[in-house]
Length: 348
Image (cartoon, rainbow, N blue to C red; front, side, top):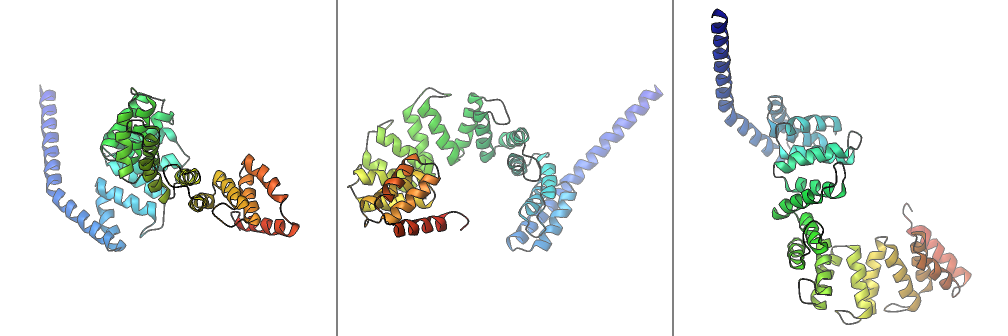
């Protein structure tokens, strides 16, 4: 009985100590919150000395949010020398306490191999933890990895679930991918109305790929009445954001007069924007425009230059066009074109 009684005393003491610890934590919570607020204010003012002092104290005491913020400073190299190792250390401590932002950033570091070898399985693990905590970006990333079987077994149904969760939180990437799921009828029955709904939500948030996808639905009359003019509206929005595929599409529509009045100058303008971003198809098309003098003055030197850049990028049509252009040029013109090609190549 003495043994039992001693055990009960020990249990009572342990319970009493635990209660005291909980009381102390409750008492310290407002103090920690105030210190964290002061640290955040200091960061906003770029007062890193004050912020670091406060964050270190809180992080050493186990405050998860402070650990995340300290890790972010090391990650970005703000107020301290950039250190992947320190960022990982503090992110991990924070994430293990259920801090969603830390879990997400830890996932990113494993995904891109920042501070360690790239590890898709670890990335999926931490994205999963952040997703379970309701982080929309993590939900989207986890969905993509499940969709691709990257770091986790392929699971279309689970991917759909996480796309839906992220989409419902307003993640534009997820909304666009959810639209594709409904359009293709992959993990859900094909439903063009639902596809349009999600493409539109994403497009209205300014996501260029969704804008072009919505335009495609108007072009084909899927889930909406066929409407070239409305399609052009969304193609233009994406093109104006620098989305190469949209720029090429808009240029092609101006060239043939689809949804807009035929305008070779506008076609040249938009092929030019895509060509300047290194798109080989646009470079070949722009070369043809200069070779034919459509919407621009005929210029064989420019035509040869764009054909050459496109051919170097692997465009087979451009390689043939290059030979044709050369047949209509003098040796001096070809030499000038080759000089321009050299100047236009990356690194020059």
